[in-house]
Length: 209
Image (cartoon, rainbow, N blue to C red; front, top):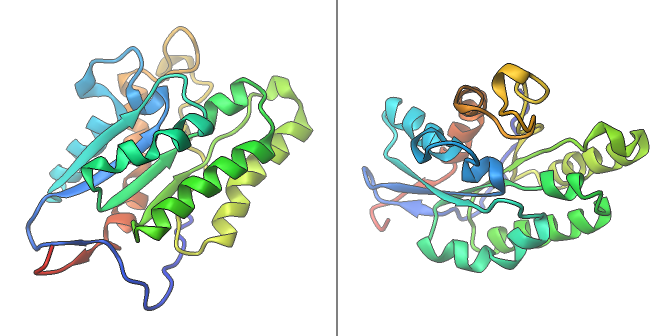
């Protein structure tokens, strides 16, 4: 379990004691819950698990099916309209499926992470793997984008692979073999939960909210 550190003295997003904490999840069809009822999609499962643990959190579903990192970058300002206290960035899968240049994906992710950092919004970056049919070299370059960003940004909480323990398992994926079933989404949410709680602990509690 890799949890990155927090830079000393950095001013964080703030929420009043007991107030609802807003967690933005910026992603693609995995976040949007393609093929699933809304209540069984990944954001809903994350929200339910956090509330079971006594956390007053609303997960803002900012997932758009088919979105690449460029799409997420283009609509980030709109997604921030709900004034989230923390964010999860879960993009890159469609860049890989389309064989887009990893350097381009990196530039888009850097722009997204920079925009969140300017607003002092604690962020979790979820990594992704490229489809194996694109070759080993592409796969290594693709995966390295996420690992390098995590190394360069000690403020990030890094979850190395969004689909850990779910990708490639036909019992946990829909017939397209890309999108998780309800059970698959629940497994992803449960695996991410410790990382997300680390993220939420970085939101400062203040009387000013």
